[in-house]
Amino acid sequence: MSSGHENLIPFDKRSEEEVRELARKGGKASGKTRREKANLRKKMNWVLTIEADAGNLSDMLKANGGESTYEEIIAMAMVKEAGMGNVQAYNAIKDTIGQSNKDDLDIAEQESKIELNRAKKETMTGENEEDEALNKLDQILKEVHDDAVKQQTK
Image 1: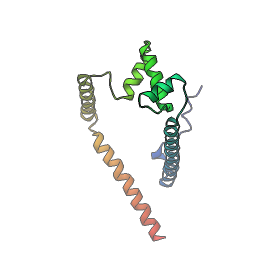
Image 2 (image 1 turned 90 degrees about the horizontal axis):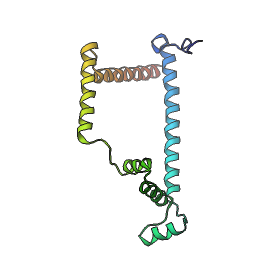
Image 3 (image 1 turned 120 degrees about the vertical axis):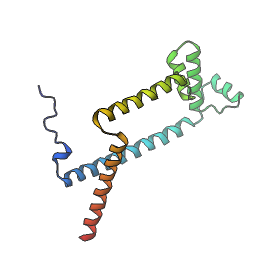
Image 4 (image 1 turned 135 degrees about the vertical axis):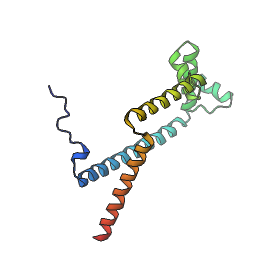
């Protein structure tokens, strides 16, 4: 059975026009997806701020200065679940308020491992990730410049 990769053509085997057209299509699709996600995020934020009636819970929230929005009701449900021993709810609360299970030493160790791996890669291949990124950016800018020159000459 085939793996499905035999019909893929690498970018270095395509014409400049083909690569440019694929990049243009990808950029448009990416922009559309980004706008859709932003719109959904905006709608979700709006929905969470709507006042809701959750019986006694709403009364308690309002008595303590709350507004009884869906956001507050969900937060209270998470706290209730965590209080009953639900570790997932507890972790979700910690994530929401910005607490991490990792201490500063764990984070520092992880950062040093990443730096060590970058150094190993540079030693083995002679490639520097920052140089690679800058080279790709230079290539993109050159293509944009060349396209602009072509458009002006037409």
